[in-house]
Image (cartoon, rainbow, N blue to C red; front, top):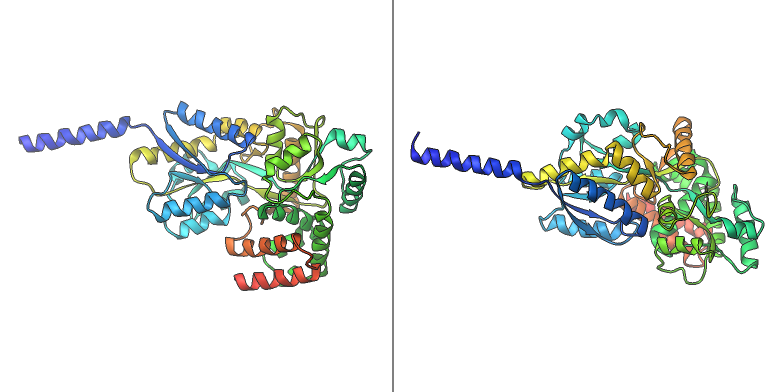
Length: 414
């Protein structure tokens, strides 16, 4: 062996040794910034560090994820994609079609994801036969949260129909209490709207309208009724609602300033983080009507250079779907495990209700992806619906005009 060859071999050995010793690296872009969410993501950081990795946190405030999406696109367009980003639903497929997602099938197959994840949810994580994202949890979107003391003091119970909700709200208004804590942000308007729509249209009607974009359903008298109920709901929020973050609305329910909030079960994470007890300090019940609207948080992995970053992706993917993290994270976050084999013994009554309802809805065919939270539709169509909802909620627009605007917006987005 020549000196030149020996030198080359030695250099390769050094590089290989350095690569073998390199710690897994992960720069993670996410929008978990509220109290309960920050506590949850801290759990993942701790597990990542315990696995020998170095985590670089890139939080982007904004509960709906719009700001995070803008930041992510800027990073990718600049050729500087993060190791992983919090993305969900059809947006995963959109990024895959741009050719920038990494294949994490090796981890998924080694960890038997296909065996432990619900089929419908697993489908969101797969791109053209490969695994390209790791699911974290299952959030239910269609919840009513309530201050138990406020309801008891006013002789009220949790409403099971929209008529009951409206009657309770009128009682609360008369008592000088804000019936509905709400933040005037487009995604929050959409969250309330789709909960109302599920209750009035039913599961099949919801699927036709917000999954299949069936124009007959979108322009039906039932859809007019949905907007009628939204107009009624507008009268139940306080005058300072514009721009309020969702977790501040949750705090209004906690401190008794407001009675109800319609929000996904990440709101429960806020109650729990504040030391509140379900069934005692706060109450939970699905919004009126049958069905279950799901929102699944997930991390998509982007094409990155460097073995340390690729090892970081593998470690991150393994951890987020691992049984330990699934339990600890979801206990903090307010959601339920995405894995079907994780025990719920340590979870609260709201989580138990959510899990039972999800199983029942899965059996009945009423387990549905949330349009408002990016699970059912691509961005253009979802945005067209939300623009209509927000325009109606913040004006005197009639329900009939809103339905016409909705139909036109959907037609123009296709």
